[in-house]
Each structure stands twice: as C-alpha cells, then as structure tokens.
Length: 216
Image (cartoon, rainbow, N blue to C red; front, side, top):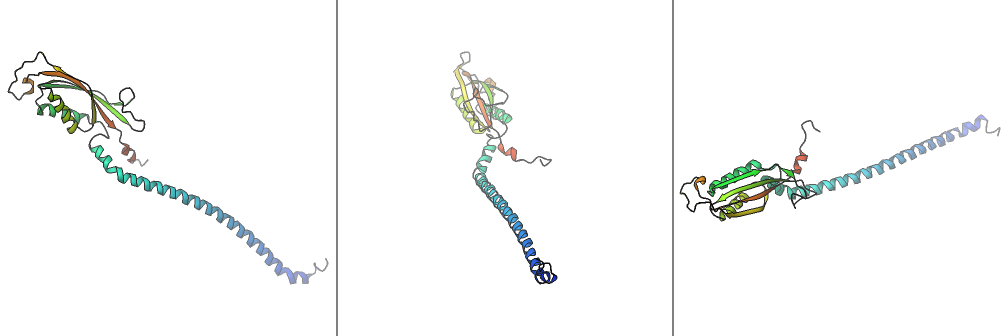
C-alpha cells in the first residue's frame, strides 16, 4: 500500500488512469448521444409516417377533385347547387306564359326553407337541401298548354323541381270563341287549375374553401 503512494507509481501509471477516465467520459457521452439519436430517429420515423398519411390523403383528395370538380361546377351553373334562383324562375315563367299565349297564370313564391321529413321525401342527412315552394294558378286555352308550360320551365329554369297536387278542370264559364288578338288576356280560357312546384337547391360546399379577408 505504501508503494502505491509513492510518486514513481503515479508517475508511471498516471497517464494510463487519465486515459481510462477520459475513455469512460467519452463512452458516457457517446451513449447519451446514441440514446438521443435513437429518440430523434423514432420521432423522425413517426413524423415521416404521418406525412406519408397526409400525402396519401392529399393525393386521394386531388384525384376526387379532378374527377368531380367539372360536374360539380356544371351543377352550379344549372342552378341546382347554390342559392335558389328565385328571380330567374319568375322570369322564365313569365316568358313561357307569353310564348304559349296562355290566358292567365298567377304564382306565389314562398320563402325558402330547409328540407325536413315532413315537407319532402328527398331529405338527406349528408346534404344541405333547401326547398322553395311555388303555387301556380292558371287559365288555359287547351289542356296541353299545361304540359308545354311545365316542360318549358324544366328546360329553361335554373334548378330542379317536382310538381305535385296538380289539377286541371274545364272552365265552364269561358266562352268558346277565341279572339285573334295576341294579348293573352283577350284569349278565352277553356280550362283552369293549379299546381304546386317544389324547387330544390343544394348547399354549396365550395364556399367553405374561400379565405376570409382577415386571413383566418
């Protein structure tokens, strides 16, 4: 033991002890760095997998967008998707009445409401469906004028509608003579009746894509 305390011993083995200590410190640092690197690798792998999932979802969304965007925009143009085209319906109806020389047509356009199980059979939980009721009271020269009127509305109007509770009956008080005037009010109406139209509009999901002015 006394030999260990002698200076020649430390002089002879001190460098080796210092090197061993330095090696232990280096090994500890290496283990710590390795552990941190493994943690970073795990985090990187997790982030990579998440990014792969995000990229896959983006690719699928892009494919769906490319497939359905043009038909969707076509439905927007046709007036089925978006705000109800109330003014356009009225203008179309008036133009059809003048075109077919229908003696008289009165219509009442009710407020637009959300579709429910009580007001339509076309309610859908996954879609925003709006309904705009329209009642039409008419006087016709011929029975066929009603079908011409409905057909013209279907072709010319922006939107989709269903006809229900329609009724046509002979107008017993009308004169059998028909004036040669082009003024509809001068034409004797041989038939009269009424019909209810339900106009359907779907909510526009693309409005959710718009960026607000404040950037939110």
